[in-house]
Image (cartoon, rainbow over all chains, first blue to last red; front, side, top):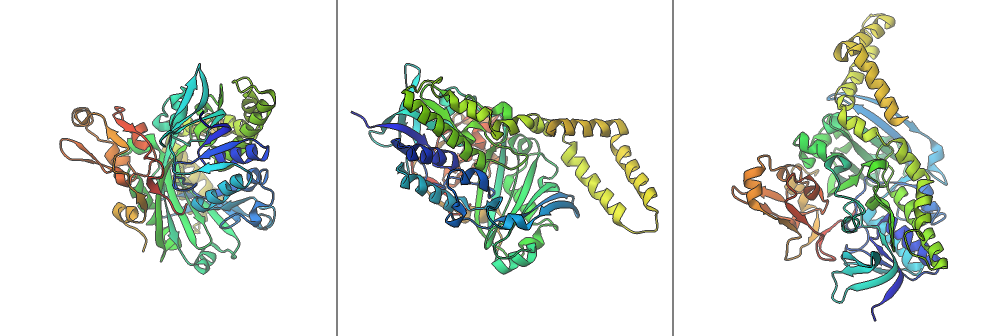
Length: 431
Length: 94
């Protein structure tokens, strides 16, 4: 008789581990399967982890989790070739409990998080690939792994298998991603002494800063770059939609090196030592790319369900929240012993009533708009830079005259009506 | 030193290579006859794919397992699997 679990979770990232943790806490018999050597060994993230959704799972986690720095400042750069228009927010309230968010290094964080699920009673098995879901009479009843005699059975299988989710495709929950639904991101971890980081970013030891960089960071393509402070390293990365990368024939590592050598960026990295290079896809298709998330004996969570808010760089928090919601639905299904799609549907309801789907719905047209109308990144960012340069250069021209000249140059470049159309379209996409 | 080339970047990584490729170009003729741009050789973040005049060389050993080639191949000509459990890339940091 093959072994049977209450729940098998495929993938020990934030979504899968959150789900396994809550299921185990509720006394369910949980197996958590990870294909990597250890949780986090296949995972990549720019590095921002939001506090709230993890706190809902592990109160006061910041007292023990391997975190880098609490983020007290978030900057946004609209970057041109030799200039940048920047704005941001720095607040000391983010530097004290309960904090807002942290930078983390995922290979360390994920191991710690998975350990929490194990302590709650989940069984973690590393170095195991789930090749397919075992389906009987239209119902998922288990998984086939690449281990000898590797069939495992469960009442519910949780697909937390990440952006590529081959299992979701096997079940027909979603088709292959289109190249405009995923962002290809390449990043480096660059070691730099703590004192240098503190000086360059104007920080104390336990304070962090994030910079999101638009415009020339992607050479005008749809995407963003980021520079985040860890304790004694920096994470720098850049990504665009795969479709943009294809269209512009960009090599991700060339884009990364372009960013690292950019005159606005390179002084911040100077003297740093590259420690790791990582590439990954981010499922940025948004609301319309979210697949079916519940089936008979199966639920889909995290990146596998495209639960990423690209505009607000939220993903791991949504992963954790979705994992928790799925676990609660599984626990409920267990009390009624009904693991059918309708028995598990409270997960879907919870997900759609939560901030996750509400936020994805809010931005459902954003990616499409910015992909279809490249002027926002290609033309407006340089225009903003030119305008700022003109306005702040003191040359004897009266300010009102300067304003007129700036408006004129903007409308001359794009045409008044097109500028108004662009503004309205952008507002509509993010309102 | 901060890396300057993809070779230097890849050198920073740890791989536990399987003996068998998890990436398969299904039909090299398609690359030759129907794919003038050979996009996988451009956007692959690890330079896994190299065109050798008549066939596509697949350096699966350096793969980041991101999935871009599977999604981005205009001819759906790449069979993409995960490496055997515990094999492939091993990220140590981020």
